[in-house]
Image (cartoon, rainbow, N blue to C red; front, side, top):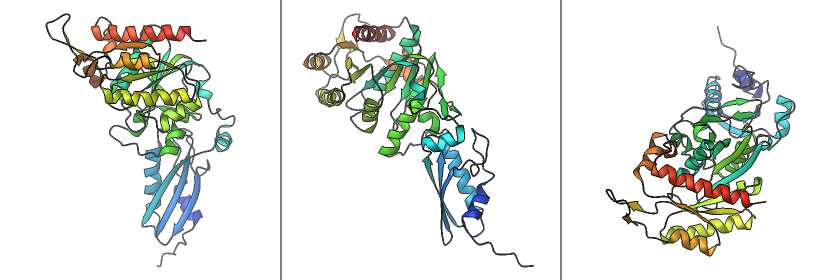
Length: 357
């Protein structure tokens, strides 16, 4: 008996995908209108799927599930799946009253960004320990890892969990009393995040506006180094209370700091002050002797040049590195010398913030 030959067309493709369900809404992705485009050529098919948000935690799994279903269609040898993001209007058709673009930020009182002119200066270390210290002082605190290509915050906060979604909003994880969100929690352990500029901009806006941050006194935003897409997007999208710029004492780092400060001044974003990391090494067995491995006076110099406060100097202390590697920030040990340094930096920032109108 001969099998009837199936003519490949869009209806055949949609039929093959109709049993794939959106994990959040538990409905068929075809029924939800998530299949935006079907293109057929010879034995190849390309399908464009629109997820509800750029930071959808299931985007990679959905992509593979759709691709596997496409390859089961008789006559299809090559299948390509493009993941895009729904527009606000498309989301509204699914959720009814869809959340506004900045819905998640409506109860966030203050945003503090942590920036650096170059990588490797300890910016994420400052972000994590600042957030944990603020929480320890009783402030409702969150941290957003906006470094899309090098997201370290989940590891430094000791979590490998993945966030859930609810009605077009992502629910942040929580660790040590701090709410957190990062691309690393979406992509999975060791998975590279290969996003170009426009998608980075869109994802950052989603992480700000479509994450259910709830009521926060402070949201700490850990920016990537330099003056690229992410810092520009944050600076132009939301009102920032202040930026903390992290540097190290050596001359090359200070030149990069100048460019970073200039970026924020161009966007009328106030700079709260400078933090100098890896400032000195206290010699073992000595109370007062220090070794200035990367030079000295750099933080003071840049602070004086821009008339900014020097919020603090962080020593080269193995416990700080160990805290980041183990996922238990050093500031959790409130009696340690390193914790006292971060506490002083936090106090200096809060004093600066209190003086702002």
